[in-house]
Image 1 (cartoon, one colour):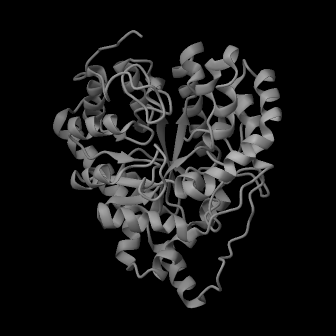
Image 2 (cartoon, rainbow, N blue to C red):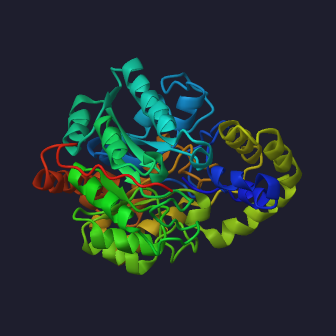
Image 3 (spheres, rainbow, N blue to C red):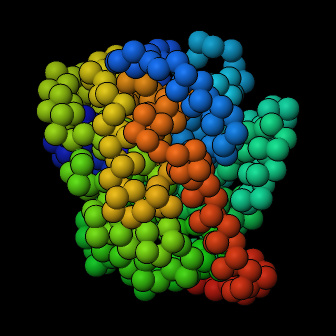
Length: 439
């Protein structure tokens, strides 16, 4: 998940309500607006190339490693099988249209729960929402926890549903709690969100631990032992470097892009892109417009923030004790004032850059749909994923390389984490530490 620029800038000015600042994303969090259905490109489409793109999409395993539709699924019992139009960027119909094989549903836990309690319980509620979706739609969806499960879902013509925790504060500083989430099917954890937690520094948070603390390193080792992927999106550069040093399995970034092309802390600098590549990991590019082209988008977003300041301050005061409703209402306000969309070519530039720096085997897709409001033209919901394939063909990528980007690169990393876990331990709790820390 990403910070909402509008809300953070306002909240930091409200001293008495400053504790909310971490609870609200700044440029991207929950999306609740009708989704434009346009799929047209800015230039005339080559129909033969488009048909080839659709064929590749049908044959490929297509994986998105970060989707925040889990929040409305939990808060509002949003049904993925509902008939369009619906207010979100993700639905079964749209996933099918986009050729989706597997979706990771994000269990995003607002930092508000750190201050007020209930982070683990909130995580459990979100896990239940994913199970509920699968049980409601057994003909279209299947629960998955392994690389083999994803391949099996492809063969069955179903969409594999997996889960990743966004924000290590969800485990409440407890390795036993981490293991319980693994038992329930969680297969990756983002070490931090925008807030620095009690054992890891965040990219946008206070630098308290000089990266990972000793306990943070133990968390990474325990994730390796379980076979839970170590996600370095949102973390500080030093935390990322420490995770690369400690992890016995490849690490990945579930939804980050290249800092060289969009200079925001949430993106990854070239030296760390190279290290992720050299250690066998993968970077799943984030589609959020600010992370795609900061130079273009940041001034536009700043102007929007200024225009909406009074309205947002009123929302902040009204929903000070309800972080979920505050984020939802803030989303509606932001969505009603969209930014001009970037061309999809800007997004593909990030794939090109990561291929150049880290290699073709180390890039994938982590769109962040329903976690942000502003996306490039032609990449604005899950149904539009074939446009990525089309644009890659235009740039001369081969089908084998496109299939790597769409899903095979991530599957390799996922399978490697499973292999490392089998070598380290054959039990979940039996070989694990019982360590917990206090704040």
